[in-house]
Length: 281
Ligand code: NAI
Image (cartoon, rainbow, N blue to C red; front, side, top):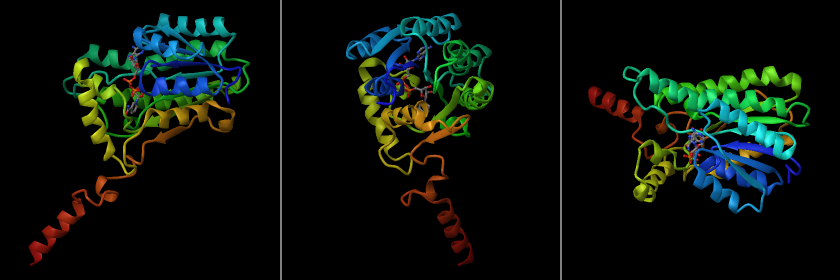
């Protein structure tokens, strides 16, 4: 019960990582202001929470709506202790030599400006609150190529750097800021990115989860709860000495090329060795 008497604002609350985090923070005593563009999903989440989760429909691409969300949280509960800037989607998937400027801007606004403005409009309500903490969802895509489309990865790299700079700026107010880099987490984001129609979502998720099961050293892929655990830790006083950090929660997907950890993977070095053997022999 690390959040009794505290208020947390969570964006992207209606599904996946955000939803799991709302439930976790509420189960540990927080009053959670849950924000999402998805009104039905948000209302459903709030309805099962005994009043601990309050839904406010919010489009994080709309800066006015972000300000309204933070003001609402403070007016309703007296202030803000924890913010989890998490809402997101794949953004424009075009390669860098084909992307149009509108798609680029849309992706940056959804994934990066939303986090900057989430911080901007939450902080006035966080000053003077003991143990105030901001957590932002970045991605393993922040760390290198090969995990996502370019615009997404660049925006998420921005979230990583923004978290460090905000940690520096906000130290004077005793507000900690950290980022989380999730790996392959089994949520709806992949089916949404691929524009799978609703009636085929379950089918698509079976395939996606099967891919997730073998995508990293830890078998089975990540669950939203794996990220919620890290959010709750970073948001709590247990993490009082952690700021400006990024926590990689990825089942080891970033430790190195697949053949280094998967004995069943075709190994580049094996094929090189075979080639050398045949060339010599
Ligand atoms: P999800 O699709 O299950 O949930 C995303 C939520 O964000 C949805 O409820 C959606 O309605 C909401 N959302 C989308 N656009 C919005 C907007 N303009 N305003 C308000 N809400 C909006 O996906 P997931 O995986 O839970 O995604 C959460 C965050 O985690 C995202 O920022 C994503 O980029 C990030 N992430 C996810 C990974 C994964 O493997 N699932 C890996 C790395 C990062």
